[in-house]
Image 1 (tube, rainbow, N blue to C red):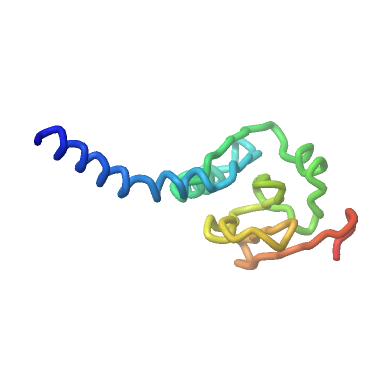
Image 2: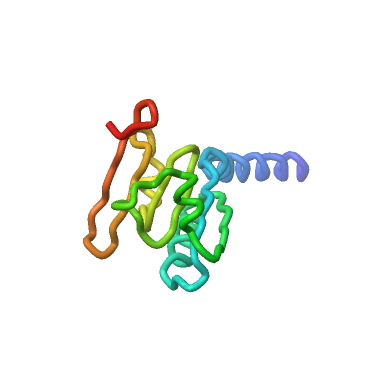
Amino acid sequence: MLSTKRGLALAALGLLVAPTVARAQALPRVQVWRDAGCGCCGGWVEHMRAAGFPLEDNIVQSVAAIRRRLRTPSDLLSCHAALVDGYVLEGHVPAAAVKRLETYDIIAFDGERGRMSFMRFRGGEPV
């Protein structure tokens, strides 16, 4: 009888934990490139981790090289760059927005002005 109760308890626990594990596994990996001297970027990294994103945090001397590789337009530059499932992020894009990525190739958040910019590309050119 004890083993049956234990089995039922473990099964119930599994039902409670499984949705959380499934959601965490469903989120794409976030690659971040940031300057060690920037005080705000670490907070964004922690925000993304708290939202359940697996994260690769790359602290670099300059983010300029990765931005060139990602082809980020200069008018969208912010304090750090990130790549999520093929999408380019620039600045403190909220985790909720990252979870909705489907349509845009680049999303940038300008913290100073409090605005978000979106860009689509077709054939390597902005649309």
